[in-house]
Length: 120
Length: 106
Image (cartoon, rainbow over all chains, first blue to last red; front, top):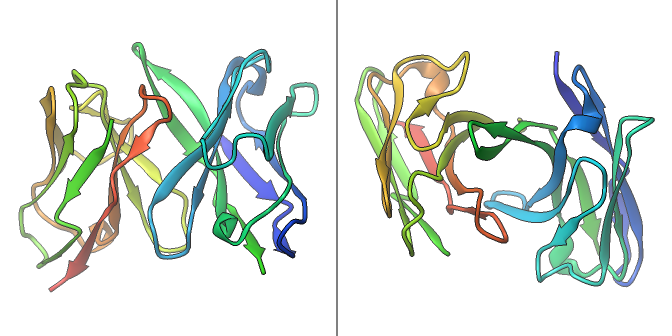
């Protein structure tokens, strides 16, 4: 079964840092781009960051550019999100998701259930 | 590119046919997907490239549209279909989700 499991969330003070991890299993992790998508409780989905299969290219939402860093360890099947200078508006459930090619169209599937980050 | 979903919430009964719409602020060809999310669960891909049913998704789900206007249709609501649905345009930067449509039992 293809599975993603996030960890590392918690409560942090404004200005603090946190590193999220996402453990992949059931598929060849090194073959796929990956992303982080967050969700404010009770609200919608917001793409946060993405990384190519080899880590050679990364991208960020404007809201986190310069504060968050995405990375991966293909030998350990792990995706990371280093979050610095955290703000109250970063409070959310953070999901990792695999970016998969569906005939030239890339969609996110599967997703993890998320890890909750609370900045307060 | 902005994605506008409607309605934001919808009440329906078992067996009803329901339609959710997603409108893009620019032409996006057929680069649109639909996701279902249940409380406390990860989003699940239902439809990709506007009208292609993801493997394992029941055939009562269908998608249509191209250009700027898209629809997700559930032909006959089942108890497990009550959830929140999101559209996604993955090929913009950043990828854009619709605001979501919460489907509730009437």
